[in-house]
Length: 374
Image (cartoon, one colour):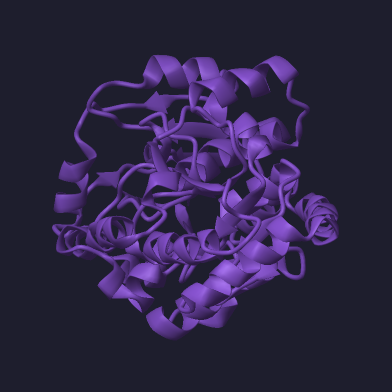
């Protein structure tokens, strides 16, 4: 059986979110040795050498060296179109692609852009329009959702027949389950000046993640006894529509205790999680949510909003807060920071929870879905 795997979302070197999903799923699909797999990479900068070293078991690596934005533009004209020769094309993200004669299996991670368009800039909304995710979902032979919540959105918002949508939970990067040497903990602590207890947030700084609400909640928290020594550390690159975050920071009475680290190298992430006193993730909406699971695998108690896919992913293993209530977020953080027993209970529940998420299981389920349509 011949498969074309579209890894374009992961060729820029990022190993978080959708790129991480695309990378780890391919790794475990290849390990199963059930498919003769070629990789569609395509990068203007060239990526064939790196991919060959990372995935030596793969067949051809297709890299035309054409900017992907050109693909996105020409998709509305009925392109890009590849010739026959594949039984299945597996796309871990809705980057446009047409392959003649192949069954199309498409993964959706969330439909936040359709449910909450106001969270996105005009440029992002144009990007989604060019990709035509609804049209792609309707044309695909199978649609895979990373949660039941995302499946409901695909059916309700896109009108995709329910029987065409399957749910397969994502796995978890194994590095967060591993032991970390004391020297690595010390290195990362010194690198980022982590001398105090801190609340950690990890993710792209954009409206949906509710970083502004977290900043306001942290300001409330710092007025309370027992939290004077606590910092707020925000790790993640800047996204879009940053005005709300900048305003919240300027107005915060605790702004001197808030630090933005920007993009943190992947090798620093496991120690950074381990050093945190609590992980905060008060997002307005998530289809799945990798960072809370990474924190739980690292032995850190999680405070999160349990809406969308997060309610399935975290269940009872996190301290639940309302993303629209800054005081509720502050109260949740205070409960975990001030109650050692509560924090330890959340750590135990978190470690148990992450056992549900394994890339080998994900690859097995998705391989089965691909066989099903043949």
